[in-house]
Length: 253
Figure (cartoon, helix red, strand yellow):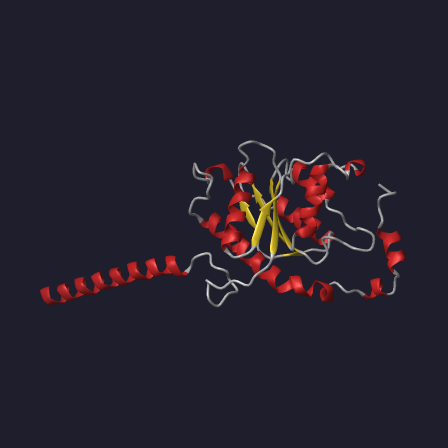
């Protein structure tokens, strides 16, 4: 019996050592490397992502999450910038405002977007909605957001909800964007960050990384096929002038 006990102990010790080595290898292997590169050191991805958040608070949780998403996207090998949400209230008469012009330039630059909003009274914040309102549905016969990708995330001060991400999905569809299947909703989000602003290890952090990775993949696959995917019969039968006249909403708003 002692012999069997010794053998059992040895087997358990080997199993424990193997498990530790496997875990350490997993931490190395499962780094945030470019997901589409055969060799993580090789990265030919060129996607550009604009990260947007819907709060002006100095200690905003959605801002912290936006910075984390930017960091993850960069580690995945794409270029990501965070937009300044402090824009004037939407008014066509203010379109020449320097902040608005800078923002619209970023929207044109981007191949994909991440929208992050706190949930306020069951829906998106006014700050987030204002940014979306400034995104033009059309410029003449050109739709700046058509065919671009979108990922949606929300943060809550209390229990988990999906009202805000669901609404942002509808808005993305209206703007003819490809919204990826995955999404993130973080309840009691103020508890999920370290003092230096990084997400704590948790299933919520893992989901945010999943969303970032999925957005990179969808954007890389779709961005060079936008013209093909968005080519429509109804628009082909219209002249450029007719389409521009039909889509110009400036006079109606």
